[in-house]
Amino acid sequence: MKIRTQSKKRKRVPQGLQKAAKEAIEETIFWHTCGITCRHTKSGFPDTGAGTGIEWEGRFFIVTANHVINEFEDSDLEFIFRPSGTLDRSLWWQNKSPQTKPPQRARDISIVQRYSDSKYDLAALEVGAELKNSLRFHRLQPDS
Image (cartoon, rainbow, N blue to C red):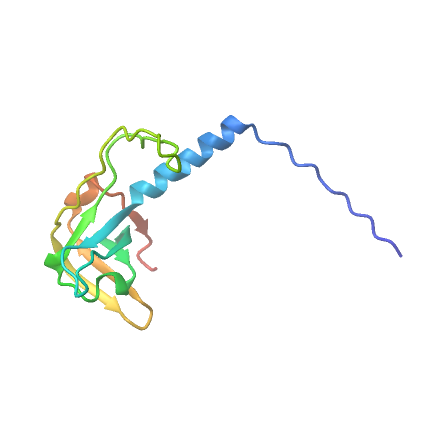
């Protein structure tokens, strides 16, 4: 017995729409993430990582991997946030691409409390609501 299946032809999405969708996704991701770096390390080289903004029960957190921050005091950590406005895009893989804006400088922030779990390599830094101008926080449901 032969089973016939119909294959649906997918409509091709116009290239301009694909580009706009990609840029919208980039904008959203960059608003919700930040860079994390430390001033001093045992090796003498800077360590870097990334964090994500989360709001839970009216509290604000930067969630990251525990290995990014576990060897450092809160006062040794600095954070890099995206610039305001729309991201400048350039052909980053080409040496001749101009950088229109300098990158944001790393800065200290006030950390209310640190929570970590080395088993799951997870850490959360509780921060103040004043960071809402620099980082967008994804709101979790209270029962999550």
